[in-house]
Length: 525
Length: 93
Image 1: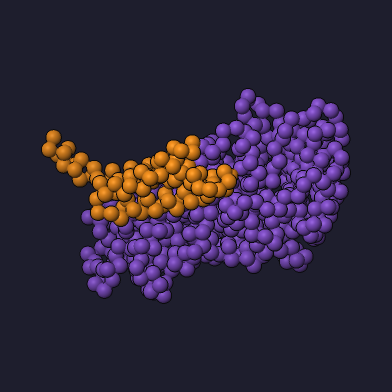
Image 2 (image 1 turned 90 degrees about the vertical axis):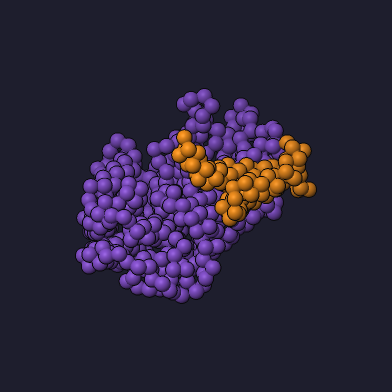
């Protein structure tokens, strides 16, 4: 069981680490997106959602006439822009075409801001990666999550003394300390780690386990019964072909606001706008309910008449809706969001310490510590690039956001390329340098980049930290100060690594006897 | 040649367990996600129940495969669970 834990954890450990860390920062993806579009003024108060919906609806009529469907996510207290997507004629037969954009709630026009994916990049990366077909990425993420689930369950079985372990911490004892850190991080966050892994699988379960669906439903109409349980997107039927302008979207949103409360409309979706058969769905926001199950009001698009209100789904569908919402944590207020962030960060550290422990445990048993075998070196180097290197790459993504000129052809793509170019460079660096130096150097580099980022922000935007603090701009001030907190964390890790390298390197050489008292715990790892 | 036989003898059961865990476990989870349609639930709810539970079944199967004493027992366990599920799954698809 112990080796199952070790190997299930290691094999996709690097993928898991990246998923965990990018997923963790995604709890602040909307804030990151705001920070990455510094030209957009912050929302001091949420604009009237009905008015904004109408504005963007009009603009979408200009941008995407004849689209079969469009959908907009209205601004809320965490979003100062309106994200919209619409269907376009597919480039290749059989494919679906989509257009997308961010719109200014004040004007309804596309935002006059630098082209960037914002926090959305980390969010998408954490379940579908990049540079590969989306479906492959999602399968890889699913496999990694399944390995994680097995690693968690086998980890619990391995630790019979799980709660004793939690209160055990031996500082500065190398392998013991790594083990204790790994145990504490795992046990403290155990319910969360289990929940986040299982619910992560649930978010994409229709992809991973399609067999029941395929066996149960033979026709598209039947299949629609299922999708109605899962999403507020109404299925486009056939257009009538008769032109009819869309009724007032503002009125529909107002009716929804009356029902669900101020600022609590999430999404407006229209099928066949401009046709007599148009349908509008106005979906409830995510605040105040721990569920992603569809709740929406459906209107006749041509007349504006309310056709139906859907506010409940079946028990299994509601279970899925709650699990889904628990994963995303979008219902959270600020404090809850920070809790999500911190525990998820501990989960990241759990994976990271687990990866490092694999090498720490084996280093002492190496036949020749000067020339470790290939597998050992591979794990050691991949650890450096995927842990310290990822911090550098993610920070480089934010640097690219500030440094790349705009306008620039496919600028958003270049931010992403910068992330991967830097990540590959960290791997090359880890391959050519001695392991301890590589750790120390990369952690220092990450620390420096994080520390300088608020300064770069001050020089390249109109929103330096002192001004954000003065104006009470919590998003900009929060991210700038978070960079410094993370810079400090990386600096501490870098100093400890460098010191340990200087002091303990010779101490490692004499053959060490395994401490007698703890041999029974050796298996944990 | 005897070296080769020795290798197969020593790593064979491990490989067999890995296959049982990865593919056997998935097959069992998939099978149960179809068999659940035989429950007296509406189709969409049954399908979703099957999907939701499948990952627990998969994880449980993997743990089982590595917890028992031999690879043979691991496979036998998976098959014993699969046998009653199979007619249920066939009856609904």
